Length: 372
Image (cartoon, rainbow, N blue to C red):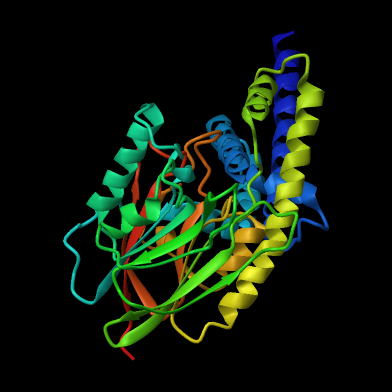
């Protein structure tokens, strides 16, 4: 009987290993297939880190059991090396040096989630807003890109443009996406360096997202172009997060909740892919060295990320370490905020400011234009 149980257990593990390997390989296809053609593959791409962890778990299991099946799992693992390389930074951990060196540009990107509070008052959210503004002031980047930035000229609401400019940013550009009477939410670029020109492209409807903005910035004797945007979010509400919790606990409403969550994921993934195509086309036309900052609402193992990144450098992969989570909710594997540069820059250092103020973490990098 014990030997029969052992055989059944081993066969079950083999079947689970095969299922994991197949799903892992399918998830590795996500960057190369348009979500409109196969949104299921795109959703599997979101689960790549989990599938990677499971596959590594099976490799260790077969090693412990001293079975040859370990080689099959290793081959499958290596087949996804491109997805692994964009999901994990393998640099040695190092402290961020705040004393900026000459000729380097410090750039920061942060989804500030509307600064949590719009109206002037002294409630808890307004106090967190003050902490967020203080964090921006302390980090003191040369160029600051903010997504989900809220501004209103109405005296009953916060005038956040004035707040940021008072920190030493005389130049700015804001997309002014309307969200009510005299209330605006969008992507913003603030700079200590002069802006020579600016531009804006609005995405097609029904996208509920922020425009792609850019600013041509004069840095010493050079001109660089900085892009900022926030792509289509899944737009989960409180009830959706509750549904996900119920799915995790396998409650009676598992099927119904799964359908709702998957429907929102499908819609957002397809919209983001189309937006990514637009971003890539516009960045390809840039006449200047280019930096891209933004909340893509998508993981590195995605069509959105691969399309926008192209052959650009990812500051986190160049100088960061580990998985680099930037979104504080749902999963510890969600890196969805990025600083990308073309090859005319060298990336000197990178950091995440891991403070639970917004639902995103600020990311920051020092870059330097290569000598011509």
